[in-house]
Image (cartoon, rainbow, N blue to C red; front, side, top):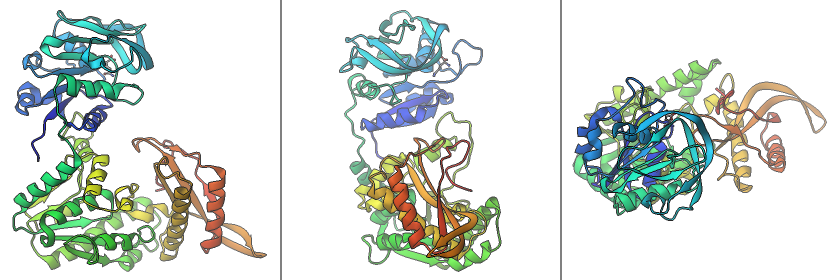
Length: 515
Ligand code: GLN
């Protein structure tokens, strides 16, 4: 929306391309990912202040390997090639790239040349993350080598007069200790950026732009209470106030006090000016779910019922001009619209809603933001910390944390156990390092003894994982005392639970959620 200085990341299918964009943005420079397929003219048309060519799985010398017209290097726009991107730059400009005698994978000591602007304020010997089979045997004419490793004679090259730079390693991953400094050097020293990408000004300009776009129109927003939809709603409320209606559906599968928390922020006593509708649909969902065991069927029922409830509310409101969605940048890239991703997964923040609402246009105010930026925007908008720093929570809610049939009684058990677990994790100060943690209710009942009396009750499973991307995860090594305190609190405070188990499984082979 705002006209910021922009760096383009040209995606050749590398694993870390989103990370590159995030790192650049952490330097306060706006950055977007585009596929190499869009070509040089389209890249130039976006008027970037710098271009970064990413890594990729191919070999540049193979027939049909992803490439670009070499005129990209004549635009006068600074280019940084990373791994595949560095090899491609050399290949296209007359250097020689071939299979390396010694491939490098992992942390590698790189010897750098102080004269390169990329290595300004970087240690002469610095640990970098390498992941390549090919290497640059001979740099292209006019380029000088600015770094090497024991196995790789060309770990970095440059031709400063043409503003072309290339590194064989990956500055974007945290294993490259001074990688952030190198990217910072590229955007500030080479591209000459000023750093105009800041969340406070983003919020301000977005609010203005939303006002212009929406005019006197009506906006409808499905509020889930998650980070994305809450931030989108807050921004729209700031922009158009009472022209916005937010519908929040309590399907009876939320965490303890969640409905109250959302109502406190967005309801009539909250800080925002808007129309807020909270629908208590708990009974409807419980009835539909009665007797259903199978996870996929549970998900389907909840998704469909959600649409029914929302549709009924939308009908009461009548036609609107805009339907707001909390789509964020990773959703856009994952749908195949941004980068070179092969997963073409259409993205709806609220599954299938647009088909059931009478509206003219979709508005997605967070479309350009990464998750951490979305949280930051939420803080700028004055949302409370418990909303902006919330953990991921699945759409079907607690239904997939209750193994087997869902009943109101089981929902109560899991809500209470989960609240205790979250409280104890926070008390132990683990909430910042453990990425996701919750309690689930197993479908197992077993024998116990309480006050000399036999019990035959349910078992709660505690889950806590560390992960960077939620694609893979490890069970978190929670200190035994914390598990013990939580266990005794749960069996004491939550009736009909007589056993607590800790889930030690990672993902894979398990998933983070139970169903
Ligand atoms: N496929 C190329 C190689 O093996 C580039 C690898 C990469 O970009 N990570 O060298």
